Image (cartoon, rainbow, N blue to C red; front, side):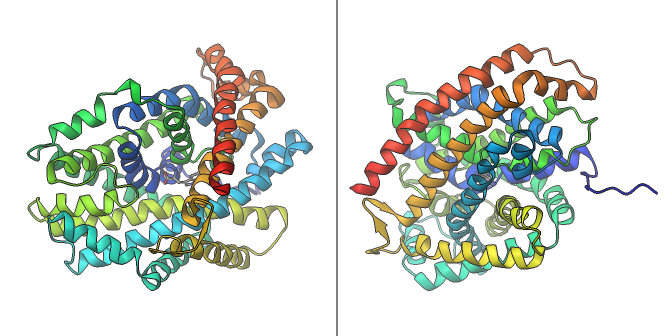
Length: 452
Ligand code: TRP
């Protein structure tokens, strides 16, 4: 009898949904719109799209290919090809801890808003009232921590129950739902009176606004949003069958992910202008603005409840992919028990997350230099760790595995990779050099901010 040692995705669609489930999360719905607002609008969007095409998508293909070729998760994948590269696995584990420590804080906000939506507390268009609800939450340590704990507990529950059941089923139902809902909200947002200003802000790039800072944030956002740089896509790719067309897969995920981010942008930014909110609001933008959009819709409360529920699921399919990476290190490499590892890792991440949440409370002393713990985790994970991971991924696939081997793996499914020379050129030169320039500046700025 044939024994299968590794479970594969039940279908290619299952993999795409799960990978898209990891990619599409708070990064798209919460972070992208507010980053557009704080980084100058259309210029940021343009740079984001440029990096997405030249750097993010080629790296997505590199990651999935590396995973499927080795049939191993991130630790094994690097190690099996070159032992000296095992440290990339550690980097991934650390990165998983840091991202989830603040991601779970925001996940908690979403849960809190879900509860308030159910109770009908968000049903107003008044910017002052909505800003008040958000700042009350921010200034209540107990609320922040309790909801963060619930979010972490849900994430742990899913991870304990194993990869396929948890990830695939959840993604299959929730992703399409989220898309439909976002489109409806975006339609309402762009048809509000006075939304034109916001549409222009989003679409018309003011090129004088492109600074190194904007480029740095856009690149970090590409990696964060695509879940690239800490091995999620390597691990997911390792579950793919040899017949699967890696090319179309590696293009669909970034395409879906970017579509989700752009629709979320259209749902949020035009409404900001139409309803009198602040576009540079920062992390509160979605929470303050969207309830007002719901309040201007028929059946608004139902949409509001459905929205925060779906965002909860989108956040969970992302958070479980992060936790999964760290847990699988303990399970696969150190041969620990899955349940115990998940509990231990989850609790440590939750404890690390407490200062992130508390640093948001007014007058908090959880600061190092000019950065709150929340910002430190955010910047450390995206600008430093993910960007470093992405840099190493490109070097590894281009020069250690070699693009020639990668192209062979890609063509295993019987397709011809016509753009192979272009892709090779990108991962060998454009990606590492581009990422290195940004990375250098990120390290510099991060250290300066910590010292200030
Ligand atoms: N991409 C997810 C989002 O946009 C976040 C995420 C999940 C992630 N897994 C990751 C980011 C791994 C970096 C690495 O919300």
